[in-house]
Image 1 (cartoon, rainbow, N blue to C red):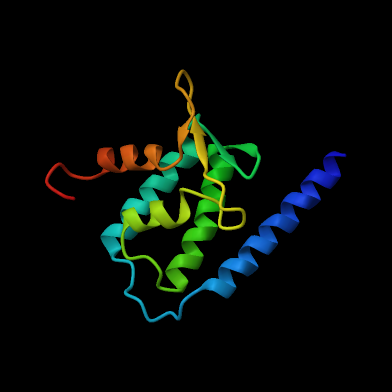
Image 2 (cartoon, rainbow, N blue to C red):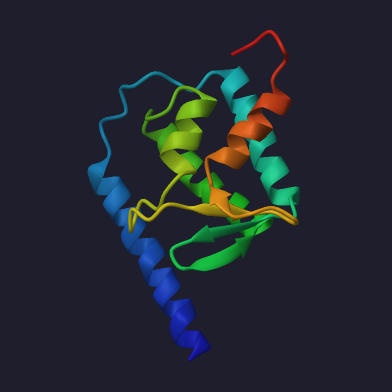
Length: 133
């Protein structure tokens, strides 16, 4: 039974990736700035090191697993020129499943579950200097 669930998860990821590829716009959009890349890298590192759990397509995942998944989405979005800043990364990669459209959730120790976009936006405010966005 567990093997079937793993296989179904892999198939769902592959279908989601194919759908994302098919829906992509031509890669003529602006590039990700180095400052945005630095912020996103910092967000992904914080995510990977967090003790939070991330809900995606019916199951909870560790921060490390969520980091790997969002890195894959980031790589795709950057390759296609579909994001230009950290906010777009959060919105396009970190709020819902590209496959199912279901929203992601975050559960951190001693806190209520929350929509996934809340956590990275909060972390982004901590990363940024006080005088920026």
